[in-house]
Structure formats: C-alpha cells, structure tokens
Image (cartoon, rainbow, N blue to C red; front, side, top):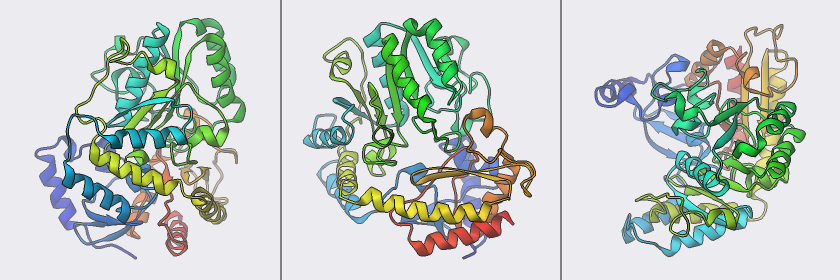
Amino acid sequence: MGINERILSAAAFEQAQRVIPGGVNSPVRALKSVGTTPLFVKEAKGAYLTDIDDNRIIDFCMSWGVFILGHNNERVSQAAIDAVWRGSSYGIPTVSETILAEKVRQAFPSMERLRFVNSGTEATMSAIRVARGFTGRNLLVKFEGNYHGHADHLLVSAGSGVANITNASSAGVPDGFVRYTAVLPYNDTEALHCFFAEHGHEVAALIIEPVACNMGVVVPTEDFLKATREVTEQYGAILIFDEVITGFRLAFGGAQQRFGIMPDMTTVGKIVGGGFPAAAFGGREDIMRVLAPEGPVYQAGTLSGNPVAMAAGIETVRQLSQPGFYEALERKSDDFITKLEQIIAGRGIQLNRCGSMFTLFFSSKADGSEHFNDSPVRNFKDTQRSDQQRFARYFRNMLSRGIYVSPSQFEGNFISETHTPEILDYVLKSIAESID
C-alpha cells in the first residue's frame, strides 16, 4: 500500500512554521523525534486517514486513543451536526450535560458527582485542587513516567512528549511549583509503602495512570495497584485514577473496572468527548461538595460542557454500552497480539499490552542479544533503555507502507472497532517487513 511523496504536506508544514511555533499545536505531532516531517490530514473515516497528498493511511494512533469507534462514526458525527445547528455554545446549562454525566456515572460508580472540562490537563489539575481543598494538605504523589497533562506542578518526571527530560520536565516551571510534588518509581510497592510511612499524613492526593500509557503502555503489578488504594486509605489521602486514556478504553468502566479497584476520584477524557474537546473529573460526593459554587474550591470554564461535545459524547457512550462491544474488541486484540508476538520473537523487541492498547519497545540489538530480560517493561527506567533511533526507523518504514503508528517510542497504539481482520493482517505483514 505504499504512499505518494508528501509534497503538499511538506509545503503546509513550512507555511505553518511561519506562524505556529514548531509548525504544530502539540509538540509530538512535528515527528521530529522519528526523523521526518508531519503529514497534514484532510479527512478521516473508520481506520483510515487521508492526507493532503491523497495518501490513504491506516491509523494506529487514532487521535491518541480517542476513536475507539473509528474516525467519523456516522451516528456520532450526525449527533454533533444536529447540535451545531441548535447552537455551538451558550455559557448556560443544557440538559445534555446532565445526560452525559449520568452515563459517565453509570460507567464509573466512583464518580458520584462530576464536572466537565475541555481537556485532560484541566481535569487532572482540577481534581488535584479539589483533593487539596478537601484534605487541607499540600503534598501530591505521582509516579515516574506518568503524564497527567502540562500543568506546572505535574511536569516533573513526566512521560509522553517530555519523557526524555529530567527534573522539571519543562523550562518555565519554577522549582517552587514542583516543591509539593513527590515522584516515586512506578510498580515499586516497597518504595510506595516507605514513602507513606514517613510522609503519609502530609499527602493530599496520590495520582496515577492505573495503566501507564505515556511512557509506552506499562501495566501495573497486582500488588502495586492494590497498594495505592491501601496506603491512601490508611493515611487519609485521596486516590486519583487518571483514566484520561484508559477510561472507556480498557472496559466500559475503565481500568478501575478491569482491575476491581475503586479510587476516590477519577479523571476521564479523549473517548468521552467522541472526538470533540471534553473531559471530566469527579469522585465521592463528599469530596466534590468542596467545589464552587457549593464550596470554597474554585474551577470554571467558558466552554465546559460544550453542547456539541456533549452530544458526541452521549452517542459515543451509548454505542460503547451495547452488549458485547468490549468482548469483541478484546478478542480482536488477542488475535492480533498473538500473531505479533510470533513476528517479533527473538528480534530484540519487547511487547507490552493491555486490552486494545500496545507498545513495541526496541532494544539496541535487532538480533535479540540485548533485550528486556524476556519480561514486560515495568517502569520508567526500563523504558529508557529503548533504542529510540531504531524505533524511528521502524516508524518511517511503517509510514512508507501506509501505516501511521503513534510517533513516539513512549506512546501506545490503539486498536479500534473499525480495524478489520484484513487491515490487521496487512499491519502484521508490514511490521514484519519494517523490523527486517
């Protein structure tokens, strides 16, 4: 399925750089780390993108996990179109906000009360503020490689596009902004217990990606995830599950349903907006009562609960709630992963997977003589052993075959309802050719 030369995309990128810093509105889109320039998309449908050079490309990034139903789902798009004709924004409440909130609460019983915002960053930032307001404490605990958005106090040992940066993960973040952020190693139960034994009564909240998705897909050990619930209950801290990616992805009720652990607060995003800017944060009723206008913790947003995003979200969640949806997606993913494991065996590549998300971590020796000890990558330190140059060659090889995988060694890939067996077989063939 090779692709045409991306002449128009190259010109569009050159023009964009004259007015937009780096030519993109989110850094990883520039494809700088994988040694190429971005493609510019003109439309998408199902599992395919079409760029402005008329290349039809299989998408395995799916807007970073948003499109579990595939791009431009007809019923979701129609719901959004109908909403636009009624009015795109009011700054006044609508019934659609309540309808979607009730659907989210049905999927996530931990979110007894919730509020909509416009992005995952807003959701996590707001949840942490609420947790601090509720507990009267300042200290936040996060984990290395977990990315919770680009709020100043969260940009320390973060994953995603800042996975290669140490200490404060961005210039412009004063040391004082991360003074109350403690960072622990992911999947290290002993370190977690030791920290809480010494500082537990100071901790307002522990925030975690229950399955890390921004240092590549990294699955928690059973004892580690249980320990986050145990220590926060013991010391009166708030446990926040950041399910911006895993929510509605790993199960209808996200990672907390899949692993059977109930957090105090939850953030969801991406899928919940059906392709439009929307996210939500919520939790126990007593915690959420501190939020204005009921309580003293302030949070607001002009476009929060946007009626177009709410309409798209309602239709998306309605389709996801149909019996058998997640079982079918899991079976499809199981079959794909089983075949992929056979292709990469002995090739110096580690496969991490949870549900319909997966990452290939490349070691520096393609013959497998230097590998990841034949066991899943478990933490941020493990991911840093990956050969990013080898991944970059793999990315370019896949793109030349008409497949767009997530353009970072430290991100996940996503299987959707619209990735047919025929598409997945072509992807497997292309992976085999690309790693050769």
